[in-house]
Length: 167
Image (cartoon, rainbow, N blue to C red; front, side):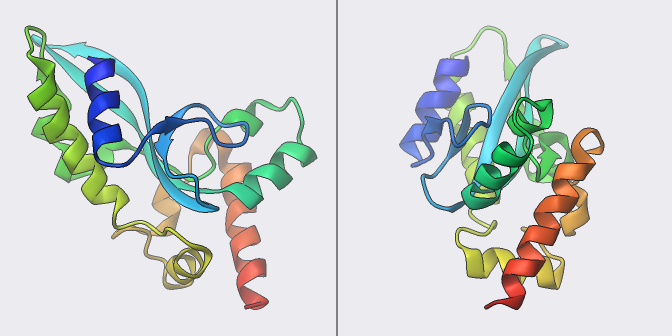
């Protein structure tokens, strides 16, 4: 099942990769990239439910963070993160029958994920604009704050705002 998701994401141009010290995710190699991290497959009522996170990575911020807090668990966590269940577009496609075949179901789910990723910033200007307008892919920026790593999220927002003032 995970292989079907990986194959599908790669076919849409979103390869699985490790950026900075973060967990593997589907992302581009660019300085600013949206990402999808598939955290696990939950068993629900005869189906797998694909669960994960969607957000944005700024590799410059991640490098600064990793240097500032080496060995801290938040170094490996995503700072800008929203649980996939918060995206109504993923709804039914996130349930995939145990029996398979997985390819078509994974493709439908991944197509919905890519639609969301395509709405997120892919460069610094778009990122700064999104933070300034408080609109990150159709959701408020603070919707992407993870209670577990709120310090990293707030530092990210501050990084973007400070950087934006110099543009």
